[in-house]
Image (tube, rainbow, N blue to C red):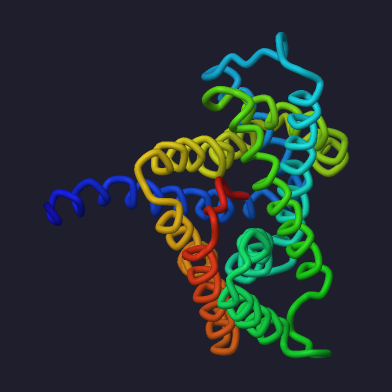
Amino acid sequence: MKVAQRRGTAFPVALVIGAIVTVQSGSALATTLFDELGPAGTVLLRSLFAAVILVAIWRPSVRGHSREALRATLLFGISLAGMNLCFYEALDRLPLGIAVTFEFVGPLGVAVLSTRKRIDFLWALLAAAGIVLLSGGLGGSGIDGTGAALALVAGCFWGAYILIGGALGRIFEGGTGLALGMAISAVLVAPFGIGGGGGDLLDPRLLALGAGVAILSSVIPYSFEFEALRRLPAGLFGVLMSLEPGVAALIGLIALGQDLAPREIVAIGLVVTASAGALRTSAGPPPLEQ
């Protein structure tokens, strides 16, 4: 029976790991567009292509839904736009692994605030120690301050995205709410993206790369996670998601040649450990990613 149980768990675990790898690969690919499109222009292509694909799959409609549902959808789109804009701006200033580590404070904060268990506050302190170490200590240098601040703001938007997304999932069927939120996000980031990317947004090569970013960072990981969440306990899903900063650092090293100092590696390890502990003992996991 245990063997069958392990086999039943292996597939959804592989889905979660696949989602983590693809979303961080998409982030690495996105950085190659920053010189020509800027972070905002890259976010626009990602959001636009992801919205087109998700709307084509789910064919969402706003008819028949209450004002509360539409208000939640608007807030979801705002949180999605803010999360991606701030994260890509941070990614333009920080290595991938460090940016994701700072941003992951959002899901960790949601996990800690959703529980009254004393041990979760110890996890929060451990994560705080990792963040302080990562930033070079109080008053330290070496990490771009603006980039770190933007990544932390992206984490706040991620936390809001988790809370609103959970409510939205109970209002709409399937991925309808996600598709609507992505469409709203694309509209909201359009002014920033057009200002940042300009005429280069029409370059066929950059459009193709932008579509690749959308597929890797949104379409594939979201689809994988929705399927995995149907098969995995919430705690196990959360622990797997806490691997995100470590995977991001590894992909940053392999794909972008972003070396990390020993202090930064230890700091990321502290945040990963704290996240795994907090998400394992909290009420639920952080659904979906940046």
